[in-house]
Image (tube, rainbow, N blue to C red; front, side, top):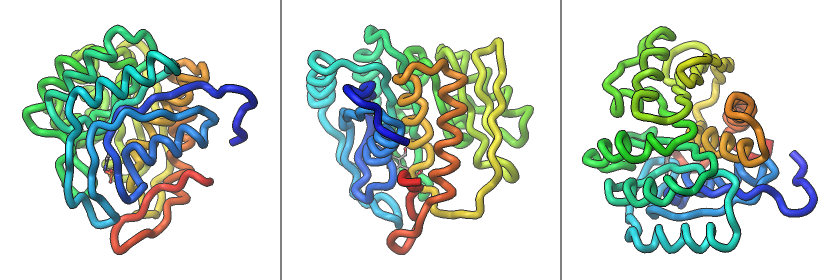
Length: 263
Ligand code: PLP
């Protein structure tokens, strides 16, 4: 997609770094660029990571997160925010407190565990996600393992997706996007604000190189909200973008390769 002339809309990601460049901050910034926006980053944690998994995690102090946020917001300003890996209860609370008064759309990707099974959020942080972070979200984007962790709802079919979305909405986000990609068959997601329902469907793609899918999806929503889309249009455009990125995912290292942004 062509980059617009002049100053592009500004989008902020608050998330962890993936040294392998496939997920986290790196996926977020690539997505934001591809969708014609200026991406900025508040780093919450550094991971040593590659196609085989996460070898180490180092969280940043809450002061460092606050200072990055103020540096960006006080000078440059933001049109939309995406949150990803927040690592600890203290960082979840810190970020929620910063976002509450901000007054721009916030996409919360409640990152819990990586595809390889590596924990990216402390288990004692789940309560802070439910009670502090979800209430400040414009859109919350859990996948099925995350929705089970947060709400206790196990999703086996599309009816369960509706129950899961209602359980997410009970924690206060304006919209819930429950991503059904972990079910067999088509990748079907449900977006709802409790009044309207939008079903998003994409064919199951035969590509195992899907590292960074969730980060990419949430960042694409934030980028489209920054451009001025309403939530349903932003999510539909983001679904299309992430489907293309999965289709173009490529092998890297000895394990699972990343989705591709140059498609
Ligand atoms: N690393 C970081 C920093 C992330 O934020 C995420 C996902 O949000 C992952 C890794 C996991 O990516 P995936 O589950 O797509 O492999």
